[in-house]
Each structure stands twice: as C-alpha cells, then as structure tokens.
Length: 288
Image (cartoon, rainbow, N blue to C red; front, side, top):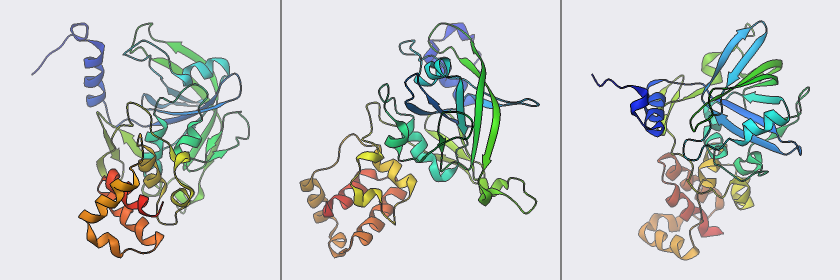
C-alpha cells in the first residue's frame, strides 16, 4: 500500500490521484454569460446534486494549477449570477470535449463546438439544444475553498426550471436510464458510458482546435457525419494539405473508387470510429 500525506505532493500530482480515484464523476456542462452578455460554455466534473427542496446543484471551477488563474465560468457567475447546467450524453461527448478547450475571453464555445444555442425561459445564459436535460439556475452563493492553484470554488445553483427531452422518458414519465445514455468523467482521457462502461476521449489540443465552425460547409452539414464526428474533426490544429491527401490515397487505392461525397464521408466516418482523425481528414480533403 502506498500511503501519502497530501502536503508531500505537488498539487499537480495530487490532482491526478484525486481524479483517478474519485469517479465516475457526473459532468456539469455549464453555460454562462459575461458582463457584456457574451456566451461561454464549459464542462466541469466536480459536480453533483445536493438538495431537492430547494433543488440545488453545485459545481466547482477550480483555480488552474499551472498558474493560479481563474476560469471564465467563475468570473461570469460573479458578474451575472445565473447558469444553465446541461446534462451530457454520449451523442454529444466529443463536442463537449472540444468546448473544454481554453479559447480566449469572449470566444463562443457554442460556435466552436457546433452545439445549438437555445434561449432560456428564465435566466439569461443559453441552453445546449443537444442536451437531454437542461437546468436553468440562479446562482445563490459562490464559496471559494482556497487562494492557491487547484483550489475549488463551489457554485451553488438553485434550479428554477428544468427542460427534459421527451425521447428520454419512459412510459410513466420518468427518465429512462438507458435512453438518457449519460457519460461521466474518470481520470486522464477516460470517460464512462453509464449503460456500456468505459471509453476513451483524447483531451483537446493543448493549443486550440480549429472548431466545428471552421469546417467546410459540406462537412459541417453532412448527412453522414454525426455531432461527435464533427467534434473530433474540429479538434485539430490545422488541416492536411491537398498534397498530403493525394499521397494518402496513393497508399490506399481503394479510396480512388469512392466517387461521391457521401461515400467519402462514410469512409471518413470509419476512420473516426477507430480514432484515426488524421486519416479521416485526408479522405475528406480529396473533394475540397
């Protein structure tokens, strides 16, 4: 047994142990706005429900370990004390992961991740249209847990309206746990799919993914590629060149027989299912 006093470890190492040991953790996909009304969207796995009367959800944006800075979500709720907490299911997990990229202040993660902005009924932040359950909340309290890197900030969020997709409900009006198909966070790149078990989602680039909004329109509006597929494609720093795509085709002569855009998109989807994003992009670039 390895026994450790927390103060003996650098915070970054302690952080890894905590996240690897405490899981699966539900994900609060938090939508906020800043003082200028600009939307922000970011996921947090320090999250749970803590009360039904009143209905209280709490999530915690921690101070960054590397430089002790705070996240836009925290800054936003201090300026505008409202948040929408969106539940994440498997169909949107890649786009959720892309939204976790640290884009600059004022950058709209809804746009970068290709997710749909839906106006809320009571609060000002937008809902995520793809989310199976959306909680409109008023922030009642923010409780800092420390001033150093890694310190959490508990955001107490009182639910004022709930939106549930009818497709996830059972015959008695409750939430069918198979239909909602939730995902939860584990350590490293690992997630857990509630109904099927663990799977892996590579972390977003340490730089910045180009975003779904930067994809060519023919790809963005594809009838073959899913939201998850677009999220994976948007999480690259740069597109391959036409020359790289043609060289790839020379190594895979079977691709030369794919004449239609739909056939190329189907082939790209096969590569994406195996996490071969670079290969998928080279197939897609043939017709660009």
